[in-house]
Length: 354
Ligand code: NAI
Ligand code: MG
Picture 1 (cartoon, rainbow, N blue to C red):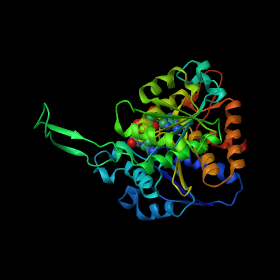
Picture 2: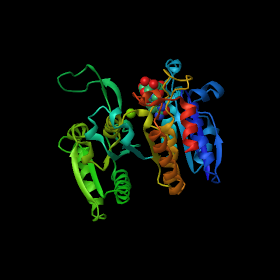
Picture 3: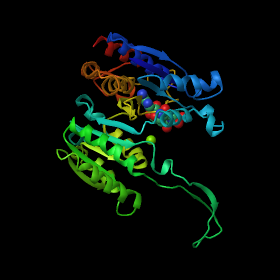
Picture 4: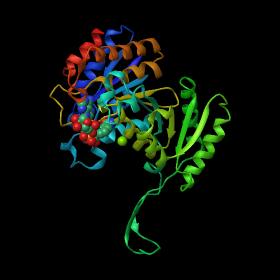
């Protein structure tokens, strides 16, 4: 099992270090190969995604990614910025399916921004399409408005676009994920206004015919945003496009207490995946030894489950995380009265011990 380890910038190396300790204690035949990415790679090699880093990722069964980015790179040209490395990995590896579970652990119901009774037992899975939609559609750019009331004025435009195979493959991913859970999928669209998302709805409905055991409902994105904060437990698997998924998954993350708790997986058609915490490089706390490593440790568990076929080991990690929360250990982002404040390394080592 070949794993590429890409720690990146900011808190990335600190949190990935703890996840690697957890992987090592499992005593499975892993080959871990580390490479630089993001600003760390720019400093060492002049590019945020050097060829050897990309080749290592492509040749691995899975990638464990920390985070990239720092204010000190803000003045670089766009293609040299650290964030381009994660976009380059997604594009080159064809990572079209982004899994973002939002689970509220029983020990953290009071850390949520919602009332405890609304989030107690929350366990939803947002599946975001990651390589299409308005983020990549052409044409795009700036020009003089060719017509309309503001003809001749400067304007900017992007193109929202989805092909049928792109929608079909993410729909299959969602229905198959639902089979392993509670057999319910909510497809989120804006079919009332956007042709792209009427098409999305039609194609998802067509694919659904192959999954008679799964219940499917459709919801407009504005209502979905409202339901997520009103009654989040009504959802189980949510599938949606790139932009709606970007926004809804960040919204859902806050229900669980801290972004430092949230893992993610991005998969391609070959079952290869990139696993990373949902948060960024947190430059405000980098180097202080206080970052929460649990999102990265839980990402490693997702990696074992989805790309390496090690369900039992994945479940062991998740139980160990629950156990350290049960012991009352908390990094500052999830700390509350009556619990014990610990740093990144203490938290990682407690998971190893558990
Ligand atoms: P961020 O997620 O890095 O930080 C937001 C807030 O959450 C900060 O207050 C931070 O201290 C806190 N936080 C994040 N992770 C934490 C953890 N594990 N434990 C405790 N607290 C944590 O987002 P921000 O500040 O918008 O971006 C910082 C940099 O990260 C930027 O350069 C941005 O482009 C980059 N970024 C990279 C991503 C990636 O590598 N995939 C994703 C999002 C942002
Ligand atoms: Mg986002």
